[in-house]
Each structure stands twice: as structure tokens, then as C-alpha cells.
Image (tube, rainbow, N blue to C red; front, side, top):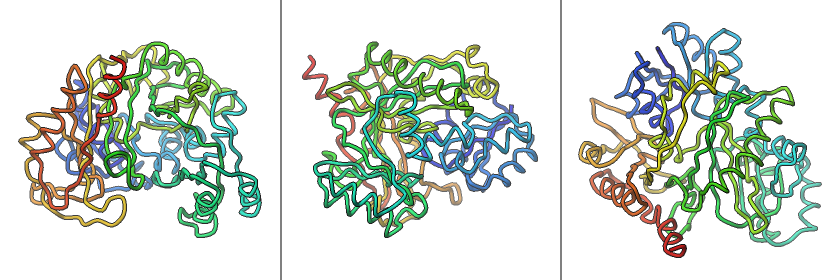
Length: 426
């Protein structure tokens, strides 16, 4: 089979790596791809939102199946256009992807289908939103309605911070049209967990879970980022929580989308907060997470090409999807200054040595004369695996120590909280 993978991050390199292990794969195209995906197939220099270009490329290269990585491609309607052209594609339509691309829609959807979540209200008027905040104080969350590259959710400690966040969205237009509508909701507290399931709109795969680290600096300090590391499975993920997530959150969402005439096919990503009053949804996403994919896919037992094809054809019940008991810890290496200003174009050394010890997934990289150069904020995700958090973590950091590039930075505490909780439980 000839496959097209849309995207360019660490998530996409991990997907490409897993697809490349399938005996069904003949040729893999990744658009636009990165330095890592170039080693697994051919990169096609088209943006994820260039739907017309992607469709033409798929037809020209006689692609049998397309896998969508990033949310912006879903919002652009790539799945709708491919399906209209009779091409198989794994991912939700634009209407189904609204569960991620519009937080106002998602909040109202969860209310309609009685899916536990934080109490919240959507506003498209600055004045009304400001008057609502004037009657509130204490911790509160302000969310830009649309896609904002992971920066549109602001956890505010008090009313003053909430007003500043509201101004940033609606007055300063920091997130463009994504902030024209905002959702203001209660601030939940507790451990977070990312839960993933493949679905063809009817059938649902066994769930898999991971935890990520969003803050830039050790000890969960510094600005929010797209993700500085992750591990899977969470130390608190047990059969009771898995069943609860399946029956109270994932299946009601998939059944609700189907009932509303927008069946969801692809990967549903449910972000949960384990509060004192029980699990609640922080948000839904319509694709695999980044950097969670990098620690989840190494645990996948099953052929990802077969799974993606079954999702696209509504036959997921015929595919084998399982998750092994291994532990994976992923450390994201970034360009110093990320998520703000940073410099690119530096050669990366030690990749071959690191890859002998662990998995190394490229994100912000490009090849120049067969040399990998930095080309983004998040540069690499280095993944160690083993039967325990300690062994997986040690493997990851030993490999990180082999990699060198100018202005490299990374958190040194990825996986520590899992070890600490395990010690407390022990």
C-alpha cells in the first residue's frame, strides 16, 4: 500500500515509524514531514492546511490510504475533501473535529450528553464576559474557543488574571479569530491523564493512557508549552479507571457525535482531570497527542496500517488493537527560549549513538546534505522503555546525554512524579 501521512512533528515521526513496521507498506509519503520522516519514506513539501495540494498529491502518487496527524488539517476539511474524492482517509470530518476545534461546541455537546466536565459558559461579547467575571473570584479558566497552538487555555489564580486573559483573547486578538469567542469555566484540580481510543464511529478500541508535562521548566515552572515530555502508562491507571473512562466519557462522546449526525472516525483524545468528586473532562481532541504519541505507539500491539484502514472503512472490530505492559518515558529536547523566541539551523550530533539506546523521534528538524539541523522549538523526543519507570527513564536520559546541539534544553524531571507516587503507594 502507498500511504500519505499529514504533519511534521514528533507525533508524525512516531506515526511514520509505526506505519513503516507494517508488511503492508510499500511507500510512505509525509507532508511536509521532517528530518526523521525523510529516512522512512519521501517528504512532500505541502502544508497540512493545503487541502487542494494534498488531494492532488495523493491522486498523483496513487495513495491508497491517508493518515491525518495535526488538528489544523482536520479543521481545514481535509477528510471531507478526500472522502468526496473517493479516497480512504483516517481522521474525523470537519464537523466531527469540532469537538476539538470549538471549545464552545464541546462544552455544549458535553452538557447535552451528560458527560462530566467543568461548569462553564461561552461568550462572544467582551462586555458580557467581563460582567460575568466581575461576579466571580478565585481560580478560573479562560479558554479561546478555537485552535491556538496549545496556548489558548489560561489558568488564572484570581479575577484580575482572568480579566487580563479575557483582554488577551478578545481585545488584543492574540489568538486571532480563535479568541473571538471564549469559554470561562471553573478551575478543576487533580492529576491529569490523556486517554486515547481508535474508533470508526461505532466500534471503539481498548483505551490507552499517558501523562504529559506542559510547563517549560523543572518542577512544573515556567510558561505552558506544547509538551516537554510524557510517560505511559500512568502509575494510577487501573482497570477501574479504564472502565470508567470508557463508559462515562469515550463511548458517550462517540455515540453522541453519531446521534447528532457527525460520526467521529479516527482517534478520540479525552483529557481528564481526576478531581476529588470524580473524573471530569478538561477537553476533547480529535487526533493523537504530542508528545503522548511518542510514548503510546511503542506500546501498540497491532498493525497501524491495518488499524487505520479499518477506521477509514468502518471495520475496526476486525482489527487487532492491544497495548503491551511496557513503560515508556519520553523527554522532549527543545531550542533554548522555546516556547518564546529561539534560534534554528544548528547541526545535531550524537543521533546514531542515542538511537542505539532508545527511540529518537524528530520534530523540529530538517536535513541539509544528510546532516540533521534544528528547525523548530521542539526538536526531538527521546523515548526510553522498560518494565519500570526507573528503567525507562534511565534509558531515555542516557540517550539524551548522547545528543548535542547548540542551545539545547530539556526538563530533567520527566517521569519523576510517577516514581514518587509509586513510592507513596508502596
